[in-house]
Image (cartoon, rainbow, N blue to C red; front, side):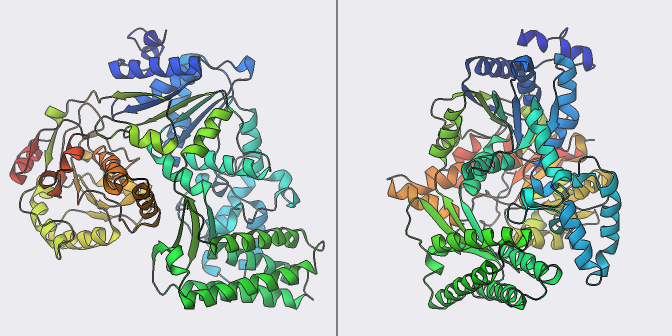
Length: 640
């Protein structure tokens, strides 16, 4: 039945002109269909071009019986894919499968307007920050007419707009049922709609947030389902680690101080001790941040907490939290906001004590600093047992898919991280003809990564290639430092538009890259995955080096130490597999359709000079290889 759905006379062919099913797509759909019927788990690596979205949506919808109250949850790694699924792919498959159930999109609470916080912010900001007046007016006008409260609806508001945290809620500052605006709360409405829906599209962060909420005994965010599909599943282990861990941050403390100060100024003006305690908390939090003596970065809290100077700040912050608790205790019952703040004081105090008992094994204790804030983190080294326990609680089918899950054809790295020991695994190669569509270059005579002046050498070597490509190039970097050096140097050597990540929102940069048609985009992090530029607008992808995560990154460092204690090899068991998966993601930006052609350049001679280089090469698509950049130039000049 599933195979016929993808045939030339099937339901999809009737809706999509010139549709033809691909062998790998049909094989994946049949495997998903079987896993759903057996209530088992399935791990599928479906390389770019397989058509994996249709391959899991079709069997999932065809097996969903809403008369029995069955539900389907689809989780993605990014909001971009979440919205594409809900707005584009799902409506088409609903029509093709004749499924008439209720579908909904559910995001995390930070995506929804909090009416209570908007009103409070307007009250606080009226005389303080006139420069935000335009944004406030825009949001206030929109808030009157919106049905969903989804901030993505607000035109011309950047994803990282400074105003957003002040008009949305977090778990820490939400008043819950005690909120005066609870009946009109957009988050509550969205969650209630999700509880009633048959198909719910969420993201991985929300899935794990739901597990965290259930553990506290305060209900749930999403309903139980009969089938769970995780797209972009390679992100799950790291996201799970975040949610199964705990965070204590200066943002939490300053938000708490703000809440208490607000109560003093609006409800309990006689309680001057509260204002004093709130100010002390703000000051102690700032002093604690300064004690790290660094502009930004991360490290081991186990080591840092032993510093005598840091111990003084730990004692000071502990005293301030104790004083704050005493002051607030005297006024309990006089304000709902204050009662909620009291719960937070207790929660933060207990967490701070746990963070200063750094001897618990099986966890990474680490800190992270930005320019203004700090966070202290406890993160479990393994989430396998916890995740497998959740899977076993539910009589459901579990589907995990991504273009990048295997390392040299093996799934062991991914399945061990999530405890998926009994899952069936399927690897499906791309239908693209990489032999004709692409060329892979590891240039000769380049210095090894870390060599002083490397950025200038890369610009000198690659400027002719980028000119031959007429721009149309992504330069993906493994660090912000290299990204900024390259962008500055390319702007001096090229007359083509050079776009730099961070100067605009991700979507705005992508739109500009496509509209220019001859641009170079220099980027890091978020552009390695979840970016789909089809056609010859993107004809060349350059990667500065193998994307090894720094061994000093706290969670990776802790996992490597744990692997060593267990008799394993930290580099080969932990660091290397993760780098292979990340590199595969970056490479996947190049060929996105059957007509695409392009050149991949990885500027790291270790791919051919070190033994482990073969692990990377054998995990990538079978592209023709060369070390001669002139051949790349020849290939690019033939592309229209």
